[in-house]
Length: 243
Length: 251
Image 1 (cartoon, rainbow over the protein chains, first blue to last red):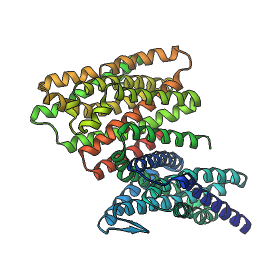
Image 2: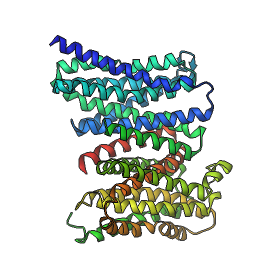
Image 3: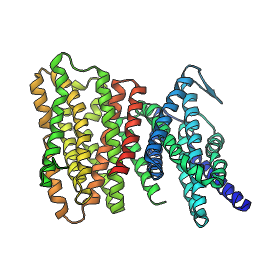
């Protein structure tokens, strides 16, 4: 039993570390123009939209009304969070003001959504151990674009590569932490899962439309943004389908 | 649904005509003065964005379930078609030059562009009607989604045409005319697709690609221009998430 718990935790940790890989493409980025920033936001938007659509479909398998309720709570949560941060002139490391607000919000959103994913991992493990390796691999690979989305917002605003990778991994730490209790008390957590998945999806979609896309349209033409968002959204849908 | 015509093709004609006719509704507020406030048009566009993005996701996932490569190629063609309508008509260039707020300056380009979009939208309705064999509900859903979109489009077109001196009635008529390709191509796609071999995954991909790219290049930025970001973003998020969830459960 405890061996199995250790295994669930370890596998969850591997998936969290994989998120850090998303920072790698930004290793060679030096100067950041307004246009690069816009394209990075477009990429993050497409990835996050695709990810949330996947979460919604996953949630619907556990309960439609619960997923919808969770989604609405997620939307309200981000609206409140944005209002709270708007008046404070927040700071994050070297960042100040609007840039800091965006980074704090995306980290909060991605970290919170990892709680739901951690529960999903634990519940899936509880369903049958022979699928364990497959599930871990799937979640690990799927975490890489999420690290990419976080880095795409942080790096152009001046964060170091190590900070991008570190915060990407941090955002996925709830996965091993939540996978263990979800695995141990699989029945109670299965009931909570659709709320969590819906919450994560609602928060991520609002984050895209509220913070990422408006800034994207500011820095490049509509066609360019449209091309990048549809390309990454399509890639994300394909990616989820074959994993 | 007992009220529907017994002949499926009549149902396709009925709903695609309804969608096209709804564009005339966009002219109605202009009959009572200067037209709807900017924020109302922004909200209408945000609502249409959410509905169309959700519908596009359904079309794309269905296309991929059929066959991957044709679905991807179709989506690429859909994006390319809509991209072409922007560059060919010089809209991309003019937007950069005069700024998007002066839509009236774009004049006939906007009318032509809307006509070209309607062609892709008509194909999308027809494709959605044959998507599930013997079940017209996805197509009816998409026709109703595009009806909402047409109301918003009718508002911006009437705004433009009024500034160029046309009457409300003339504007309403022209709005419907630009959308007349919707019923024509919906019926054609519905009738021809089953006879043309396995074109369905390509056609579904094309529909998804053109709708999503249209949302991203026209509807979403246009709503940001006209209404508050918080209002627009909240409306888009709630509608998109709800549509993705409900269409997955119900259709």
